[in-house]
Amino acid sequence: MLSFLALASTLFLCGVSASEVLVYTDANFASDIGKHDVALVEFYAPWCGHCKKLAPEYDAASITLKKADPPVALIKVDCTVETSTCSKYGVSGYPTLKIFKNGEMSKAYDGPREKDGIIRNMMKESGPVSKKLENAADVKKFLSKDTVGVIGFFSAEDSSLAKTMMRVADGLPDVRFAHTVSDDVKAELKQEDEAIVLFRPKVLQNKFEDAEVKCTETKQDKIKSFLQSEALGLCGVRNQGNAADFGKPIFVAYFNIDYEKNPKGSNYWRNRVMKVGKKTERGRCITELCYQ
Image (tube, rainbow, N blue to C red):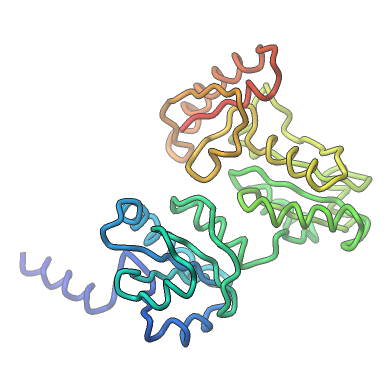
């Protein structure tokens, strides 16, 4: 028992924490917010139920994002006490989340509020909207993730289609984007002309959908709608962050999923739902199935 207490005391003294969230006040917000290239600030109230629900996800995300390259700071401000700061940034409800860049408020954060979604969105905010692929190793790394990835194949980085895709990428934080002008990379992925192609990860590949889907649209809004729909897929995972992206009419199937511990079982039920969805006569709108 004494050994356990000694260990606990040592961990406490060493500063081991389940959170890397910084607490800012009226006294230090203006002076310290500029220390971070990118930061996510939560304006909250201790009594707020939604704030309490967000807290463990925010704490967990802060640990990963502090170690990211470049790091992203997660900050919280208690609006029941720090009234001047909250008033300055027009906080009227809780929690309110805002993204700051180089000390200035950039925009409201309206992305997912679970750990992985926060991490994914903020890492995109801290880096380029699209990763440049220069060789086969870059391609392998990009396509090794368990989420959908979009790659733009361009004649030049400033081509018309390239510029359009960058604007689309900036508006789809939940989707990973990459681009290339390398002939070697184009040959590796068998792409000769300028194109935007969506790649499904192996864990989500199935007999009902193509593993690679080429976008034939050229206008920004059309490209965005196409990629958003294809990224969700025939049976996408619906969560708090993307629920509004699923069009209606819609069929919702609820079942347990765990792609880390039980990908085979998760895909078994997902495939059964897609089999039904594929047979419907009303097209993608009715077959954009989701589960959670």
